[in-house]
Image (cartoon, each protein chain N blue to C red):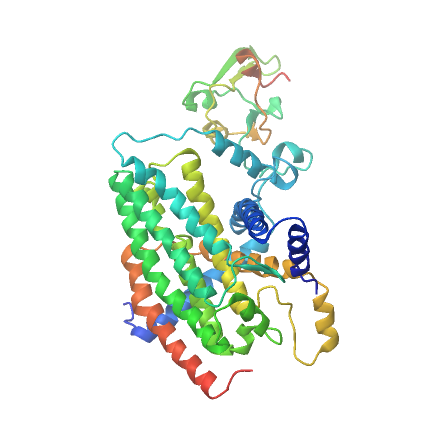
Length: 358
Length: 145
């Protein structure tokens, strides 16, 4: 299987051949930053296109099909439209916080995005508390949402922001506990290590029942954390117009929109990495020939294939279930998901202690 | 009466009903899509037979010029021009149709005229591309086509 570490090492050596270490590091950091931002944009466009097509298929329609082949140019047109729209500044808003909020949301999203291992050797942020860092940085998004609601000086925005704040903070708990369940099994928080430990079997098969329960809980909590699916309370149009981004227009709104879709990708990417083996191909212990065939598929294809599959699952959830009320959302979290995930953690502990896993 | 369920019971019931929902939409995802790509599929377009496109009179000889359609039309869309002729053999007076004037622009496609017609002389066709450049083109004479 091709290791992208070879390419990065080659670039590193080439830069070092004619410049000092410090300058080479700065240039590499800039290159990585550009790579991450470009990939972020590409993922956002792919996600929005996929959302429209999958949503259409679930509603028995075709979706965008006029602009370009299968409607692929439609997204480019949408982006251009969004870029050319005016950013309206609200007279009695808190100007500084109002303009700061979308950038905090996008910052949190980019930070979490760069934690994902995209393929063998493509790991941007990879250190021993990776999952911890990911959960922490994605939680910063809540601050941005609250600031957006507060800064726009609008009752709908404020109520929407309080609701999504309550929802995102609550669901962080069960998402983290279900990730902890798998950390129990791996005894590491480093993403590259987690992927390497799944060389023989993916964790969802290795940890069987508790891992599957954790997977389901993580998908539910993740969907709620990115304010999507049946949990899109802040966007309850009939009662809150558009929630915390009511007063935003143009590219400021675009940043919220893009962050929402990439957050969905991040949730799916983490689920794919932790439970479905990340870029690791499907290996079955003992079947050497089968494993060798699976290794021919590039690691990037494995990662994006699994992630898009999880995204598809989340979209299936979104387009199937009706929206929940705020009290129902909090009941689901505090009375059902947290007790179940804690019990699940206990089961996983028993499984690990008595070596009941595969 | 609705059965009262406990904590575990309601949880299991909830999971079961959510899975049912997943089943329904999952089937929908793989179904053939209902979207009609209209201008592209003009040749193969299927319109349901009861669609009311425009009024037609397939066989003018069926019309007995009774005027029921004209009286029932809420918009005065239909106006009949008739004349009395005397049948030479029997010597009886008979009302015959001269021209059946129908204003497509005023029609609201309520189908009252078709329902009331005693001899099924008029009916709606499924032809729906009714746009013209001049309003006068919408004034049709159905018995002379």
